[in-house]
Length: 406
Image 1 (tube, rainbow, N blue to C red):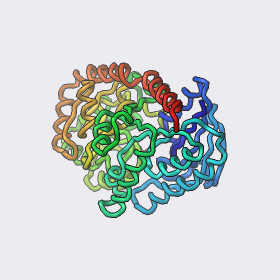
Image 2: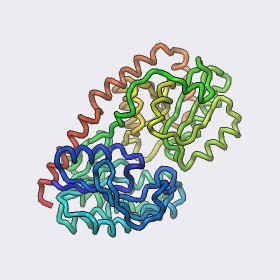
Image 3: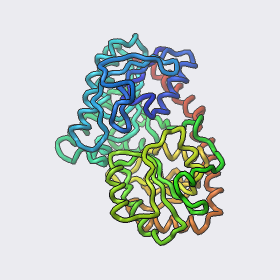
């Protein structure tokens, strides 16, 4: 079987799902090529050594990769974000000429714009394509502050429905996602739940190390850590407001790891609030993250409310579970359901600093329960989200779709 993967994001960018998929398909004897953009995510800047090439080819982990031009940006200015999406959607059609013939196209969404070249490539080869939907658009664009509820919203809603119709099959991350698409008219038999997983070469239980000393956190403090992207959908400001409510608890310390469109504003807010109990570390290489997680007492996840609810599972939650770290999740929908099902932490209402602060106080006052919560999460990950299990199902799905008529 000849498989082509179309994605705007790929190694060396954070792309665990696609890297593992390409490796597994290759190991199964399938011919794999990847069509992707010049790497620039998550900082919105070209990676060193790449620059603004129009087209370039390389081998990564034994897979041929064709890269095409993208205008680098990762913020919430609408026209700039659309430039980022649109330039790759157009340039990928040029790069597609360098791909060999194929039997099935696997398409990673977002952004929604990638569905246009996906449709054209699949039609040109007369093959089916699978749409891997990680976020609901245009709702995700609204939540990110990229678009409003006007003409652009209506256009993208129609576009999304068209993309779902054209795809031979759709994969989503949670049962809640299936329900949402079914309500929008997508046949249930056309949708499969294929969750993400953690990079298991990196994320596994480790003993605490010297991260606290390097971060300037007292050795016996209750360490609360947020590790992930800082965008408008993540509501980091509510976590800072919770930290403000706990400023008199010197034994509770906060560390924020990661960058994103809201990073600078969050650092400024921390300074404005004069939060001595908060530290920002900025971007940390994935390989260095497990050492930080091992020293944290509780991991924070916050997702703002949206019109469609939280139907996706943030990949970082699976990394925390793989490492055996307990969580406090302030979210609706799928993230909340996962924590409650796995019994790997506490949940509370999003956008509610008082509720977040109260939950953290409860956890800090009962630290003995944390180990059991972490162990529950680790076991649930091994049972349900282990790479070997999920990948086998995904590869089987791709093989079955490839065998269908276009």
